[in-house]
Length: 523
Image (cartoon, rainbow, N blue to C red; front, top):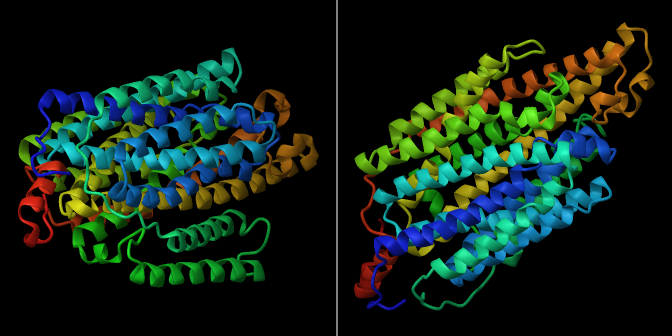
């Protein structure tokens, strides 16, 4: 980038933001549209509870692994081309998933979809840092929260309606027109100044080792206690290999020229606390929201469409928090109190959800879900904002992606661990319930052995057993998420509030070029 490049006008910023937000919307729509139909999809493809978990975990795993790689590429290559590539990967793989004939095929395409989603989510916030100052970014982060909320509302609702009306496969095809529109808007509106060319040195060794370590841990958490004992040779082998891979990854990151996650960032107190809080929020939010549709459909007998409608309070909370709190942050330059309040609400809401049963009032459940939505709006994007405010502009991509990496890692671990708990609780409760009725496990077909049941095919005599088992399992996983919410609360309490900067990333880079000897420059 040259020092004579002018900054973008407000109109140009708004046009560019429209393209970025449309890309985020398409990515999230492709992700959320299947949430209400997953119980039916897994039942149709004869999948188990573990397979249900891995439909989500596979995408979170590849999102987690690819996010820091996309972030590093954003510091080295053309960011506009990267975000367009990420969008194409996301939607093409989502459409391919619509042709799945088995759980393995579905999980594979969802994993590929996660690669593109990791790029879109990491690059969107990096691109916003390029063209908007931290002080103004709070307002636009609020808009991003609003777009995320609309995708979260529209996705499950649209998915439920399509599933009930035309079949679940249309969930994967419907995003293609939106993707084409997003590509056109991004091409026409996102005009970034040329960046200083740097040699792209990708840390393949570090990326491979991190992928191996994280993947082994997730496989272990998913199957320990079911396929093999927690204290077993399989546990020792998987955990030992995972730890070894991650230790070697740290050693590699210390010596390579362009590390995927620059280790010196961990000397920044704000970065470390944001990472801890993001990982904890990822466990609490991803690890519980994923299974909410199972509670609504399998414990309360709701259809996919009804299940989508019942999640509206959570999304309204996210929308309100994102838009309103974002404006407050831009107006005041203060963000810590909002994040502390969000973490406190998250803890209380999870506690509330840990008390639900098969007869809990939906009004009360709506209150708890609204609280979960508020906490997401107060925490997710503002943790990124607080981090970007202290990062060197030349490491904005890697630093922003690192926070997203640990949030996705927390989510992936949360989904795997809590999914394993849910599977074990449901399987045990179903078998005990059938035994009390004097019926063999075969009375429920494959569901008696752990498969996700289709309630329309379940005999009336044992329907109550299934509903009670899933309600019990859901309360277990929400209760287990409460300690992670407390970790997030402690982390944001210790966060040092740094005044939000007034210069965009483009302006900071221009200053560095005018004063090359000044070293790092913060917002």
